Length: 71
Image (tube, rainbow, N blue to C red; front, side, top):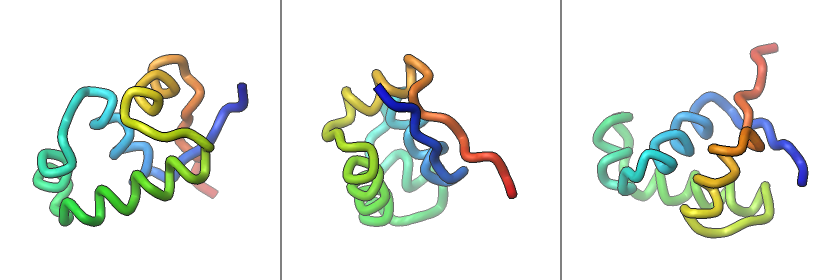
């Protein structure tokens, strides 16, 4: 399985998903709308070829999702 790099915002969202937070909770914590969280997750799912919060949390926990280095 591949390793995927994420933007800092994407990584932050995924980390919170892995902790079990809802879209509303993530939105409140980051000061964005729940729809923005949902749209970000949809783009992440599409990019890495998976769906569902559980799959995302497993990829995060196994180190398959990494923070993209700043350029």
